[in-house]
Image 1 (cartoon, helix red, strand yellow):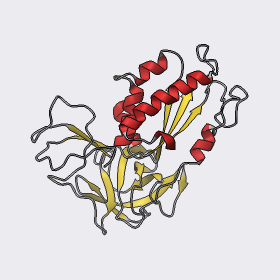
Image 2 (tube, rainbow, N blue to C red; image 1 turned 90 degrees about the vertical axis):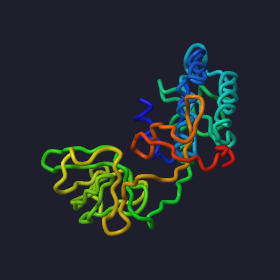
Image 3 (cartoon, helix red, strand yellow; image 1 turned 180 degrees about the vertical axis):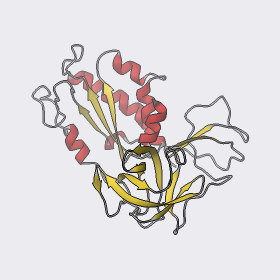
Length: 275
């Protein structure tokens, strides 16, 4: 689950951290080994700087729409997301109940004490980042499908640059080049795809065995992606065996790829909260 979550989170503009409010469930989630804590850390690690916290199951008997329980969860959650690197004052903590949709689209009569936004309003207030369409094309592949009557369709999010039909793209690693026949988003053909678009694009003369998740597509004529033997990276360590030094060999998660690497030299140590 975490591996799939990394692939999705690495390409998100914002995160909604869903927390269960019932007694015991919230506490288990934010325990040192809990997934709530790990998910928030992964989101920050992968560059997601905008977060909404949805406090769910407010209808459950042990909670019963309690403002005191909401305040307790906000206080605890603020403390641990601050340690990760988020600023709690910039986070909307939205109490909801998914069971009947309370406070998701419209304000709920069950939460008269809550004066903040609904979940939809909080999502609408997300700041859209600048889209780097002037940089060379980069599309990390999330998956590759074989679609009957169409052929091979890689899918992914355009991170930088512009993807167009009839363009010659190169996939790395592997240095495979081919022509893009069409570009689609939500089953609609596009004249071009720009950064932030999640698209599928049909390619000629390549099968699902040739290209796979983790590869990166770029424009063959403008600084195409290349495989390399070594690179300088800023790495955030999630957990480690005790000490990290030259020769340490972890699995590196980078955009949609998961690959074993070896640290050859440690250049600097950075505080992730201050940079």
